[in-house]
Length: 470
Image (cartoon, rainbow, N blue to C red):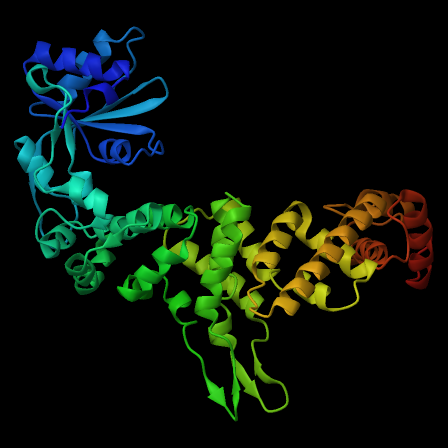
């Protein structure tokens, strides 16, 4: 089968010309070919394998392109990369690899195209298209990858135990591909993932999170997380999540399975946001429930303080997996810690003061918080489902009203500490903090409006009660 007409990007003609001038064979391989055959336009990069030096080929290609793009060379790995028309093109020499048990970094030797295809993770990623004059556009498919594409099957080119033990990240990649593409992992390969699950421990947190982020970025992440759970990988990577997969019964009282509930919430949130950190918030929003679960004869099952504990646990997860500890972590932590606040509001009479506090505490993230809480509605009772969503609409309208009237989002008290010091001739002291806090509370409770005049009058009265004179 020939795909010459599909190689309609100028870059392929230039690579073919460069290969001919260097007298090396070259092929486009991997994800680009897979997605081309699936009619998916999702990939932004192209992998080129040269039977020879990939670095030399990259440099030659650059010299033939009009703008002579800069070539990034990675000598350690024998690879090079350049950008052309917004697409990253990576060049590597065909190679064969051998591994030791303690590392996923292989010992590399020069090899043939077949050696290179042997080392690929799945048959659908071992497909190659020739860029050589004698068979330009021809598909090279030694493992029936085209058949697996048609059957929507994921299986390894060689013995899966060897493939996964050599590079355990391939197990996560397989689950990610299954989630992204809607493919099924073939039974022998799936069993091998379970068998080799412990090997994932040699993979860095950064690489694991990269795959988890891609799973979370799919339309239905629960597919991937259920596979992670089924194979034992999730218990190694995120034991805080698998700890939720238990239902206890005492005196006829049970509680819902918070693991499957969490996966529903993640699926619910995905059509409403592309923000992977909000998706992480959905994934971790209930992790505090396992350690806080208690049974009370009067109340049944309780999870008091699970949001606060969950926020602390989220930070530890970010640290353990070497995730960013900047504003992204703080955002997820905040969402987890506030995840029940709008739910409580939606069940009670919505007071202005409660909404003011919600908006003040959530700040610029109040919309994200509402999106998370609406995704948290997983009841199968249609009456309750409709009622909860209607209540959230009331909360949303109230947020808009309160914000327009009181401007409490990220507000600072209308009177500064410096002004209070000047007003009462004070040096920095506890009294200043007490007065500032009193003004903030008065505004949030609706006792005074959020303006200088009312805050000034309030402070004079409060200061007088404290024995301060101006």
